[in-house]
Structure formats: C-alpha cells, structure tokens
Amino acid sequence: MKRISTFAGAIAIAASLAAGPVAGAAVTHNAMAPVTKTGKFVKLDSSTSFTMTVSKTSYLIKTNHMTHVTENHMVVKLSILKRGDSVTVKGPLEMHTISATSVTAGM
Image (cartoon, rainbow, N blue to C red; front, side, top):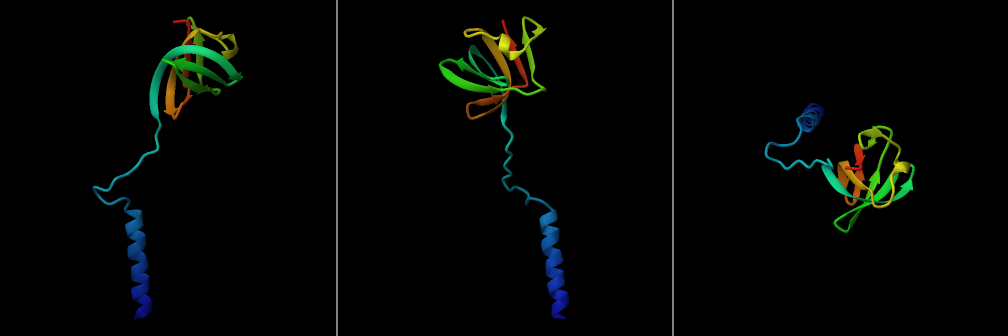
C-alpha cells in the first residue's frame, strides 16, 4: 500500500509543477525595455558597434545583420558615420547597451 501512496504523491507533485505559477503570484520577465534614443555619434568601436552620447550619457550600440542602418533615407554601413553626426537608435536597452534594430543618421 505504501508504494501506491508514494506514486500518488509523485503524480500530485508533477501535476502542480505542470500547472504553472499560483494565481496572484509575482512572475518576473527578463524582457529588456525597447527605447528610442537620439544623440551624437562618438566613435566606431568595431564593424558592428559604436558609441553615442545622449545628454552627456554614453551608450554602447550593438548591431547585427538584422539592424537597418540608414543616412538620409539611404542604406549605409556604420563606417560612413562620423564623429558628431546626429543618430537615432531604436532597440532594447540593458544597462547602457542598446541592441539596435535600427540606426538612423542625418536627421
């Protein structure tokens, strides 16, 4: 009989785990907040990242193959950007790093 009650207990634990969080329980999400920042281009750090400043705060901007980079409505490479260019960056912000989905210069 003991074997059956242990088995029943295991099923009850498995069912409670599969049910998810208890109603009203706090659930945390690790989603980064999407932002739009407009500032000045400072320097190209690599072929896929650069530094910009917004109101004296520096941000590291990371790009990838999915990032849209434009200047005056034309597709360009990051290497075309020069110190002091006005840039607008959109993407998720984590600490002082933005993973850019788009970079727009010359506006």
